[in-house]
Image 1: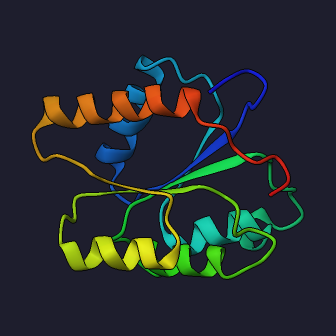
Image 2: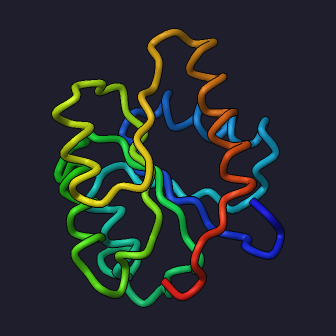
Length: 147
């Protein structure tokens, strides 16, 4: 992302292997921004709302979020709906980054307010390529500061 933006990237991903690959390939694409990882939708929501283990810690702005769908406690669609339903957080860009390619799930995510939906390929090389392309995309995206 452009230096003027310096957005923090919040990655909500319960799979350690996928999280490592996402972080590594964003770095390979030139993303130097802080990447914070949460393991489920509830922890991501706590991060945004400065609750739970993040109580008292101000949320960095600007922020962009990458959500898996299938996570324990609270899935990505539920967390997306909570964030987009709150006037204080609804402008945060949220990219759904998941293995689910079901058209009904894609529609649900867009209806709930996701900014972009990306299906993670199963193939390792394709997975890495998709994440690096996402990183290149994130470098040119303009993100609102007053989230």
